[in-house]
Length: 149
Image (cartoon, rainbow, N blue to C red; front, side, top):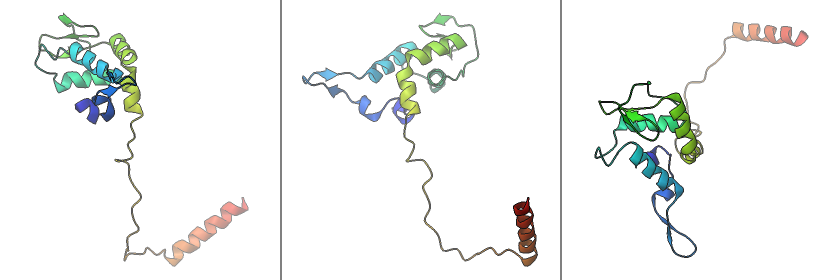
């Protein structure tokens, strides 16, 4: 659910689709989510910590959020410290980005129009700024000076 909210996977990929022959077809994104679950040892740890997911999703986005710490429990892309924190180095982060590029593309192409600023309706404002006469003369003189150059 968090990966959907963060736009790494699309809402439609969270549901299995049927192909032309009526066979249930698993989307490639779902397979990548399963790889993340396995990499971060979700089964073994009864879930994935938000910090470990943050480090992994940062690597998908080409951001290294983990200091290089010696790991005792090696995994395919990184490893876990004795405290259970996921750790990767720069080379491992590049490999994660390459292997999970579909999730990177989904995130980068996410349409943020729902959160973007929309033009506000013009409000009836009682305050109307007025420039004083001296400022108007100074501005006019400056415009004439710029126009003559």
